Length: 122
Image (tube, rainbow, N blue to C red):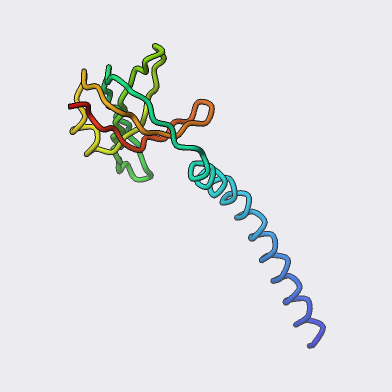
């Protein structure tokens, strides 16, 4: 009987270790990207709002139920002529207007941009 208990505990240990290994590969990249965004330097530049865009997506789940997602984006033009697109919250999308000028605060790494704030010029 003791040998059977030992085998059951060993199988339980291997199952738990395998599960932990699989979960770590699913979670670690997300933690990496979240902390990367925190560690990036904050940039501030004068900018001009040139375009606002909304992207609507639909996800069909099992049983036919659908979920609709809405993402808002704002495109800013910098003094050097380059353009940056940021995903923004609904509140930011509706309070920032096209053709406004102001101070854009953001973070950036390669093609990933993180919107922080936009203070319109008075």
